[in-house]
Length: 331
Image (cartoon, rainbow, N blue to C red; front, side, top):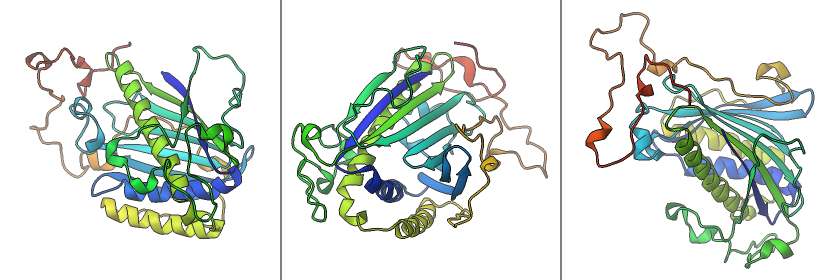
């Protein structure tokens, strides 16, 4: 298990960002999706929690096979997705992601988020209880930290961007110390990949991907501020609904039943009240299951055969755990 705390400051208020985060997530998901890859929204509906009150429950499928490194693509199915479940009780949210393919059932991501109007100075925002290991704190600068070159857009470069409607920006070096208003997005991220021989490498890789996503998303939230700053809650929810439908069509999945209405779900509908979690499952998704109306072909392989790593010019060897019938070995 690898846990890190990310702190991302923005020249916004927590109240403003309640609209901004909904707009950013919808537009960002649409931009990053393409045929067969991206974010499919399965559910999006009100949710009532006895401790946190009224919120919104969202379930998504993130298809990302082509975004995996070559060493990871060698051991996952051609159709691979992660399911993400989020409970948004703004300014507090919980997100859980779990890989749904049965060949690797011990992978999960848990993200706890809190927003405050400060410069990232609250060291006890997630409680002062001692943890087994010291949690690394990572400050993310939305203006001066580098993003992957493929995501760079001049219009989203906050070193030169100035908002016409809010008159905020340009963000100069050291802007966090002098900026008003300012808020911080605190994210406590836990990654678990309990597979012998790959745990450290995969957990570090996943954290790198998460950091890049957080940097790009929060950067875009401010770069798009003039698009959403005047929106009401009803307007941004309608934008969210329309964008989700367009994104699902763009990916090429069957359109799910997206429901955004005024009737909240009971708190028992999607998990525990105070800290919902995403249960792991060892059952494959329907499209990977053998049809029940005909027997399995005898030619179907019972094990997943990989190329012999010893024949490659690499010191990295894949363990034998990737046999469909062999249980994982403890680390």
